[in-house]
Length: 291
Image (tube, rainbow, N blue to C red; front, top):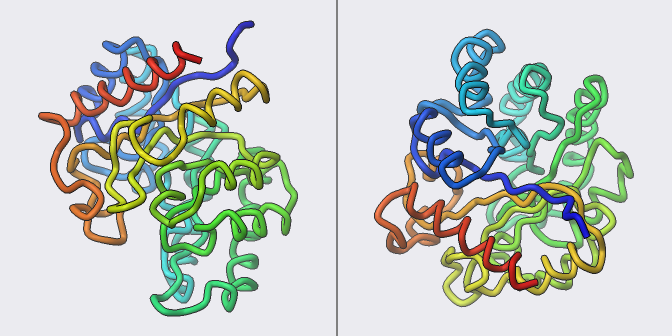
């Protein structure tokens, strides 16, 4: 059976330098990246002209394609109206950037809920805002990938399902993140069972349930080997497996995690980002070879 999945990854975990990112991934034999940041600048801060002048030539030189834009859209407080309005403009620009990069996926989130508050109390606000995001993506024919980030409305399987069922739109799909579910005390197999109809993208990140620490894929409580075997061998999953190691305290991690980054990476598990990325890549390859 010919496999129909591709391996990608958040290459900014390798280095802040974009050329170094591309050198490392191609050295591993990879041909895709999820573009989250380059040269110490988040993709949401780039203009179309900067992408054409600074990023596209390097991607072409290394023959690397972009599987998704790892945007922070929706990674604002649910009560932050000013932040939401700013992100509407950013998403429109990101959609045009995705067109430049021949990329159809943009990763998004469903807003941080204030500590101590019930996420259900914000359901209508979240749905109204997501509808605005979705309208923009529809206009460009792109797919928004909702990631189950810790602390947002859609951090549990039930609320992820609520989002998907509210819209039932092919332009809004799930990016399934094993580690984030583990860190939210969710059983990843139950999550997969509930969300399977909506999953179009997979993040390869693992964690231990006890201390919530990120670990090499296949060594935590994400049931990655079991679920990938099932998805690929039994269910015919087609799409990207995107490395997100979180094994080393890399440059932009502090801006990505709501909680202290050192709570999920208590000590570097590799000498640098490149080695940590390679560890995750080889661990994934071993899992795939053993299926």
